[in-house]
Length: 196
Image (tube, rainbow, N blue to C red; front, side):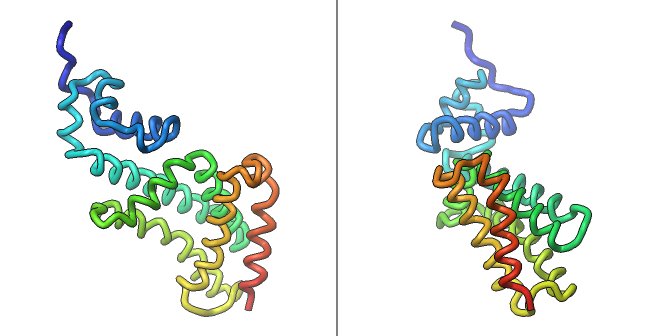
């Protein structure tokens, strides 16, 4: 039997893509660098050029998830319209991500709290809050929500959105119904409570 090739066009990306699919289909416990190498057709040693161990792979996977979610929130925060439209778009982007990539979102939050989390992962996790903080600052400046520490005010909105996403993912709320129907009411209720 011929040896498997060591090189692959963009091995790091291929490993991350396959790892994400494995997490989605089978869970984090099923991840193995050796199995990923076999799945994408490279030698079992090839992944070590990019990830020293499974923990490094998990950090990179979580970081990629935070980067992707941050990009979705930034795009949502840039929609046309006022603060209300931006809040609804931001909430929808977060819940959409959570429903579509529940296992990845769980991994993201778990990895960022690990003692050995990479600085890159911590930075990506921190950046996730920036679009929401910007939205709250803009809403405060426009007089649409009350004054106060931006992080504290933003927490009310984030906790509601994240909680709603968790209810959707857990099956308590049917995902299609949750994304379409209840989310707008949650955002309206929270923002009414944040008005001056």
